[in-house]
Amino acid sequence: MVIFNRAPVVMVSKVVLGVVLSLIILLTVVGNVLVCLAVCASRRLRCLTNCFIVSLAVTDLLLGLLVLPFSALLLLNGEWPLGPIFCNFYICMDVMLCTASILTLLAISVDRYLAVTMPLRYISLVLPWRVAVTMVIVWAISIAVSFPPIHLGWNTVNGTVQNYGPSASDKECRFELNRPYVLTDAILTFYLPLVTMCWTYFRILRIARAQAKRIISARPICMSTYNSKNNPPTTSTVVFSVTAVALREHKATVTLAAVMGVFVVCWLPYFILFTVLGLKEHTDPNTVPEFPFVLWLGYTNSALNPILYGALNRDFRSAYTHLLRCRCPSYSRWRSPQPSPEIPAVAEQVTEVMQLCDHAPFSCRATQPDQSIAAMPHELRRGTVKEN
Image 1 (spheres, rainbow, N blue to C red):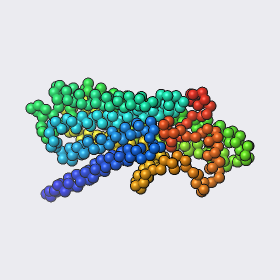
Image 2 (cartoon, one colour; image 1 turned 90 degrees about the horizontal axis):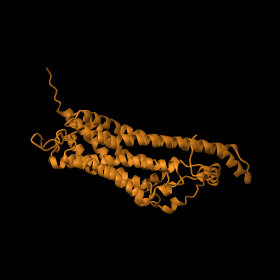
Image 3 (tube, one colour; image 1 turned 180 degrees about the vertical axis):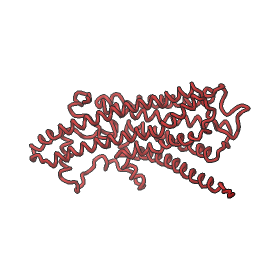
Image 4 (tube, rainbow, N blue to C red; image 1 turned 90 degrees about the vertical axis):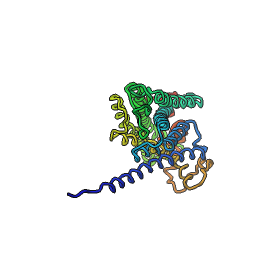
């Protein structure tokens, strides 16, 4: 009978797991630091809408610095070496920062919805003090579902503070769950935001497609009017213009689908398991084999947020490029970009026609530039955006 030594296999698996967790932590910290530096270095990015992006980046950065290293330590070591007091504080920070990140994503979706559906009223609705109040509400809810319940024992079955008492071990860090706490936390901080985000992004996609159809149908007329004063309209110019609109509409659809899809894939498995364990009033979810995996899948959303809400934006990409090359972004160059001499004449004609037809993209205050979701001129004059 041959007996295999499993120690090398276990060691290799721990090393691989440690490398993967370290990469997630590194991406979370570096990506969100890059977002904050980009906004600080570029005047173009210092607008009201990007306050939500910066708040999200700060929240995810704190998660990467204050929570993820200890989560990795607990997963790799199998024991908690830092005592019950710090254990409860770590769990509170975990719940608070994850909740703040999810609620900030909700605030971003509502902000974009207002920018698209009410372009004229957006500037008067989304004011600095209202953005500040929204952030205060986000953090108030995040603190309310983390520190008071855990430190007062509201999340445990017997009403005692978790990780204390004669049955508690100094080597364990347990997050106990009961039905009232789990249902309140899951519904308030995930399921309601999920439904709201699905509804807002679905509405944005419908409006984007409706506006793209209107632009495609109206632009040849506008171009014919423009060209009649200068040059006869050409078929290639009209085709180029219509294709550009269709591509931008497709890109907006893909962007919003990526944002919503990544959020659902990262957090839905965790909250489903969290709800099931809470209904069973499980005393230590870490003992469930699937729990660490779905938890770190949720953490991954904080590493992907800088890509989804930063790199998909043209101005953020430019700022990233300059920062990675150790150069400060030039606001004057961005503000007044000069057309490249290599751009074909037909592309320059389309750019001029778009300006004449008042199809210039919104600033970052209204919506993300790459999405190109703008209202038609006759809709802006009425102050409403209607769907087909």
